[in-house]
Image (cartoon, rainbow, N blue to C red; front, side):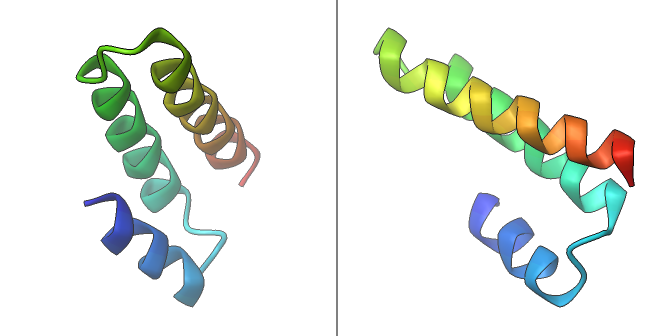
Length: 56
């Protein structure tokens, strides 16, 4: 899902609902990642997506 959402953003990088969905996908991935440091990376990506979605 993450790859497809990233591809959609290549077409329209300002689409806020795609950014929001990508943030949700990264959050879900983080919760399923057992290693804390790796999970934190996904949470950081999710936070960036959510922030960008709000700004659009």
